Length: 137
Image (cartoon, rainbow, N blue to C red; front, side, top):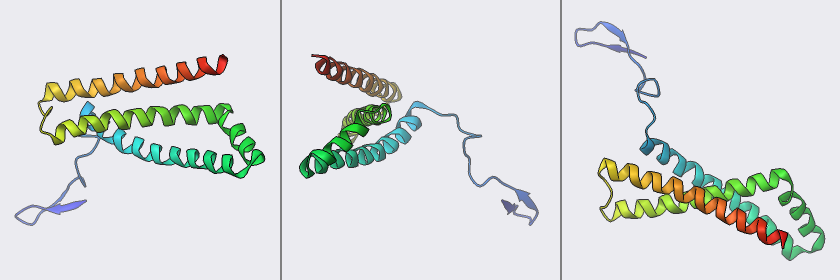
């Protein structure tokens, strides 16, 4: 972008400071991931609606959905939905703390960010381990 100095000379200026200026930080990454997981949760909920409608529609429709959900791609989508759901949930609790005025100091922000990531990983793995274990029994 071309700009002008106070004395009228043209200069080239960047449109905005972007990735070439700022390095990713936990706060920015978690903020972006909160938006991404919000979209993923919404899209995953459409899969849940498809499954429920198919269950109400009859065995043929239900078997079609079950075939997709049980495929490797379907299981990958379900796992991604699970991770997104837990991340969005735990990060939402973190934001509720912020709304109440807690956790704005930088060390607390990083501590709660790591807590969100750890809780997401542990919850997702635990839910899938229990689910797969129950399927085996």
